[in-house]
Image (cartoon, rainbow, N blue to C red; front, side, top):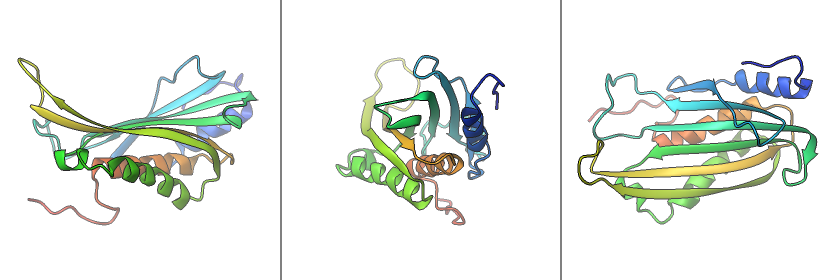
Length: 191
């Protein structure tokens, strides 16, 4: 966490709250470089699902997933945000072909976010975003699997509380869902 005394106290407190969030051990969360021109003050966290049993990148991925959660803060407020603080999220996860072709995938992925935020009882406003499912086919001399399928979820919302740690935790729950991790306390059976 890097903040400066020149930054508003509310922004410094928001950064501290985000940095103190508790997430599952399979997800690594670290500060990353935030966008510079979206708001007077910004902070960003990168999150990645770890695969401790893998020593190299697998040829056939089983749910590689990463994301970022960006805090934007404007002490004067922003009319479009309906407040002074905005959270912007992005998640990308590899999915299998059957899931990528499911016509209900966008609705289900969006419900992951809404349900996670509600489960953490986080008051918010102006929630909006998109869910995209893509399939790629590689040709010629290009690295990677011949076919790849991804899910992307982009969303932003305005928290109406100063408590931002649970927003980070909800974001990481969505990342876990997208990555296909089993629920906390449930072990994955080996094939």
